[in-house]
Image 1 (cartoon, rainbow, N blue to C red):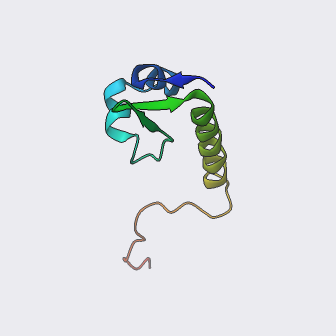
Image 2: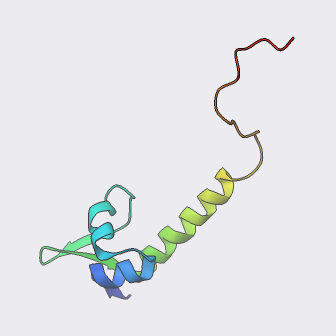
Amino acid sequence: MTILNIDDAAKFLGKTPAALRNGYKRWGIPHFRLGGQIKFTQEALQEWVEKKMKFQDIETEPSRPERRGRRSTQNVG
């Protein structure tokens, strides 16, 4: 198991340390505290990324037509 600090985890995720510090809870990134500091495991981050990638694949499937704004209420005549 590889334990990462905020800087290493941010680099792993392609984020800035500040962005990760501000968003890790909101994004649901698996973490724990050790000595009052936020820590991550590389394995948990990898699983989280893979899960997010699968979820995005499901979201982007063309199962439903995309909506593009409001429909016009004008009568075409």
